[in-house]
Length: 394
Image 1 (cartoon, rainbow, N blue to C red):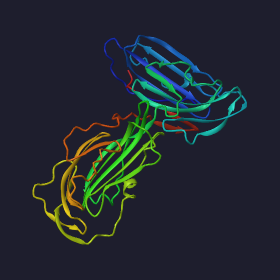
Image 2: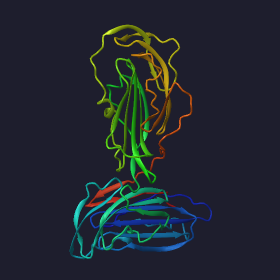
Image 3: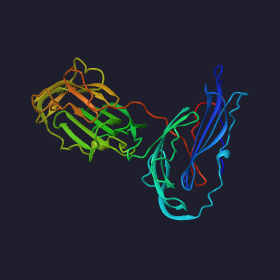
Image 4: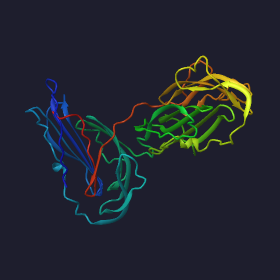
């Protein structure tokens, strides 16, 4: 059934017109709608309906209009101009998975295609412009082979469209960075809050955690995003320096499927940490401090170190990458007279790291830093409808 909407208004610049752009993508089981309205410098265009891809199976229709004959002349308020009666084609012999999603299509439903369908399509369509920037994963029935569901279309009104059928096309990753300072963070999981980002070609998803703890004083740093690199078979947990002294541990994961960097909390690292029995007090006393920004205080209180530690450590770890630039200041007990808690490690996941050194940090992996806007989904009456309200109305 047709889908209605309401929109706001805006005052256009002198000489500008009003525009409507409406795109409807139908795979027979689901419908996706993309709408943008607003002011435009483009010349007047009569209202036009274009059939970019006809059925059987996948179909793509659009409505475009640019006008200047009066205020609010871009007054399209329903999908009715693009709404067609269901296909009367009978069932064929081909079965294909069908999906329209901005996430992934791993659980796509398989259906019997209408007669005339000869191939199963699987690809991604990127839409950007007019306040829209998103990627739609598409699967469905087609009457021809190849990656050409758009039939060569590159622009639809104010929206630029592109298509890619490679396995990692327009990869979407969780994105965000966090730094937490507290007590006993090695035993207290912290929820990892992120948004999403559409990666550049050739990038993979990453998630990295670095924990530093001395006594009860802790800092944990986390990053998720896109990066140039190779996916790993499995996440990696490393204990760079362990009990009974200062604990430095990390978690790194690189993967290449949509939103595969989806760890929800720091538990992915904490659950792999060593949990030795509480050590008995030793004879050594050292200042204890871990801070993620300001230096440790000049006259810290000394505490009794655990048995097995032999020296006091006073230094810092600098890290850069994944949206993080920080210096972690550390004082605590260690088991040997070494200037390196990291054992001279220079790369931890997405982070470039340096210990007690001001040498420039060169990123080994290129990371991204711009979150994407998310498509709003409306679900009902057996349809999965996506409505993007872009710029305000004229």
